[in-house]
Length: 486
Ligand code: NAD
Image (cartoon, rainbow, N blue to C red):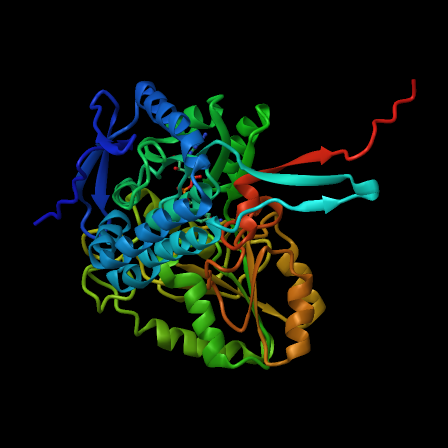
């Protein structure tokens, strides 16, 4: 029996579900079976206009509320999400194919963390007083930017909507969010829950669509800021379009991050880190450490334990809580990854584990490890965005730092070693925004998250996100006569 995940309507605008069947249909395919479980319609220009109009109309009154009041609404939304975690996690699994074992702890809950954290900060957002000579002073005023647009990738639909919506709303902005066309369902629930928690109509809106709808949002003059989670090529287009009208941006883009395992590392922990950094969410995580540099002395032990532990992955029905490894999100993404695997074999990398599509319905692929990978291979240079780990050998510290940095990306990096000074020395030289020592891919809301180089601009989460959703005006106050030259 196919699952049914049909939402009330395609869009959520001005506090209500809104349908407009004039837009092109977007089928929602359940990755575990290949069956259609819902259908939404792409936003027409009239729907885009309606959403932006609603966000614009709501913004001033929302910003005029006290931060404490806004924060209370966000924190109430966090509570509702936690109460409904099971139902929302099932929806996340249907939307993405990720195992329920993961979605129960990593998606709605992470969204709730963001709403709670930024809800807590909202009441303490202030400017400052700057004393000057002769009694003059400057005060600064922190203000919302206005209408913000959020555009999401398909790997974490609930989390991405909340990571963008929570800080935007805490600062007094309103938002129009466009989920990925591959996973359109979860953001609608975030809008519904924010409304139930007391967010006034128009404060958080969701419209569906592909890149053209995203582009229409980005170029609209009513929009002050765009926050994108997506690939580097899309990031370049969206950043350029935003720049034309001097809009603020946050760019959370792709990566090909290094994870460095030194000889003295704890093998079991290093293997755990490599598994987290390559196979969680079936490898569909932007910050994955997909270039695993392993020092020669530990290579055999590392590969042996890795293969043993990958052999215990439970691949199957994502709605079964025992399943620890689900399908790829879509047939298109599965084919992209299969092509990369074929390329790796052709380039002479050694297939050390997996590499095959599973003989069953849905978009299932084995967790895959290539050993003896060299820096020039395509599988070591391009983001694959699937469960494919490249293991590269190295001899010494200086060499591995240079090789780790030899990429246009700079999202994340990790080091496993029991030498404390080496850990900090190496991390200090890696060109990456989110770094890890003796663990990998943890992203608590309290810590900034985002990339350097081509992997991004700006930061999500932490107090830093506030600076990306607000701006400071300064007011000079003179307590003295005005001196003019003539
Ligand atoms: P994508 O770039 O294809 O699409 C991202 C979003 O942008 C989608 O909603 C898409 O409809 C929209 N879009 C496409 N063209 C557009 C345009 N011209 N104007 C406006 N919007 C447009 O990415 P994807 O395949 O959905 O997601 C995978 C990518 O996202 C990977 O590269 C991954 O690394 C990255 N990602 C980054 C982070 C992060 O936080 N850094 C998190 C998750 C995923």
